[in-house]
Image (cartoon, rainbow, N blue to C red; front, side, top):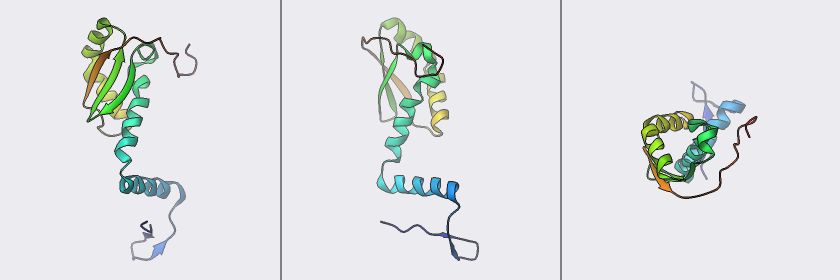
Length: 124
């Protein structure tokens, strides 16, 4: 495993600053392990409810991200049509939440499932 050392402007090694250095170290480590993209895909799925709101998130559920396409289960053609109109805005909101472009499009799949309870506090 690669040893991580921080150097000052004169090239002298120094211990990292706690919070910012830990974030940098974690980012480098995830990149080296090749899991950075998978982590971003998971973050995109988690960002779904914030991007669409709790009411819509009760009925439309993210399934997976595959090559920049977020697959979403919807209960009917009506929901599919509604989300297709909102697709550009939803994709932009998800990518903004994640902090980089992870999702390029939505693939809406008809799949019946029971409505989910919101994970947002204060919603039921």
